[in-house]
Amino acid sequence: MSKILLIEDDANLNETVTEFLEESGYEVVSAYDGYEAQERLYESKYDLILLDVNMPGINGFDLLKKSREEGLVAPAIFITSMDSVDDLERGFESGCDDYIRKPFSLKELYIRVDTLLKRGFYHEAKEFIQITPSISYEIKNNELIVNSERVSLGNKESRLLKLFMKAEGEILSHERIYKHLWDYDEEPSDTALRTYIKNLRKIIGKERVVSIKKQGYKFTTQK
Image (tube, rainbow, N blue to C red; front, top):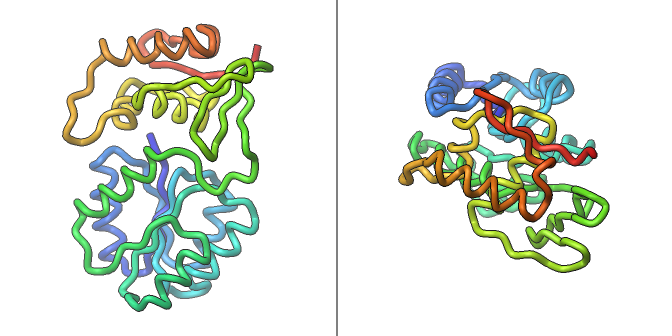
């Protein structure tokens, strides 16, 4: 389950968005001001940050910029009533990945959140993820390199590998994988998932993707 930090000082909006995202299958942690948000970011790791700009304590621009400087790599979406081009520019300069203006529809929010979570890696300082001594993943170009040769992956296999790498060592339930691989207008398939797993194992080795009976799958780069 993807974990989202929601930073919004409007209690009613915070509650509405939290309930909606939780009903959509996400885990949500709420904060109501910049200082509380800082504590949450120190305490735990998040898959995505949703934050207002004008809030008590530290404003959203400064909070995100400081967090990026300290190594935060999770994608971030500003949710704000500020709508000038200068505000938009400042938002992206501070390290956001998307910008949604109030008022907004919950469906629009879901689409933006879902799209960012499926897209892959963000704000990583490193260029490669080493899977085995002879297999690596190039973050910038989203490419798998096996024995110095670039290997093409299908769309679903690529999404699946990125999910595994982001959650190395975790047991990923079928439901979490379904949510990541299939878009909201697609029908998940256990048969198709087994095929994607099989295709990945052929390339990176079957020992890298371990089946956990009645729970899901676990990815490891360890021997």
